[in-house]
Length: 234
Image (tube, rainbow, N blue to C red; front, side, top):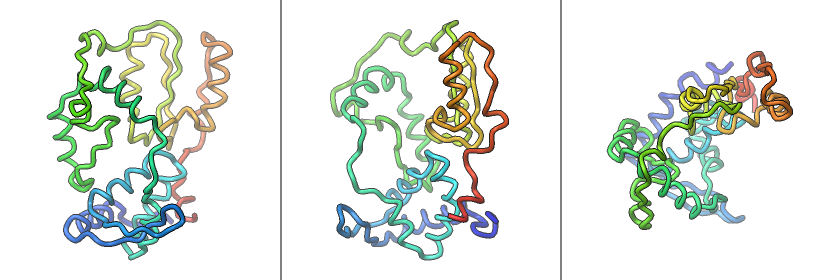
């Protein structure tokens, strides 16, 4: 079913990104009960796709949506583009990131990663893009020990989403290595915020009731959070 509805989503995506790069097109997007004309560049298109990669009920529909856009359904792309403001406390995020994490980042490595994915138009989806901390003057120089992995024997329960594009499972696995009583649970088909998955809730309740008790991995036998066949039917 999936293959018939969207036989090659990657090729469709790359073709659309290249088209937006070479010949940006006009698109009408609803904003505050009115239609706003925007220009779809490769950056705009990449941002629209990236916004679909966080939650299973959204990205399970992505192959079908990309195929629909490739077939000329501009309304599908319009529905994926948001023109509203962010609900994040951006100044707080910038202040924390610039003072606690950004000082340890390799700027050139970040830029190289952006160049490696040409189809995404060089979109920087980092919590704080390169240059923001310098521009705001929030350029702290914390001690090197602030970047060391946390070493603890306190029981910790960690959920990782199989398809989490923001914080990949490898990151959680690396974090768990320095926690002698850390328990890493992989949520199949899970995305960002995997701890909110259906299989994760009873595990969280049991863990909070007794962090030292043996814990059954309810997610090991649970169905995938993402159902791409269901996405085709929606």
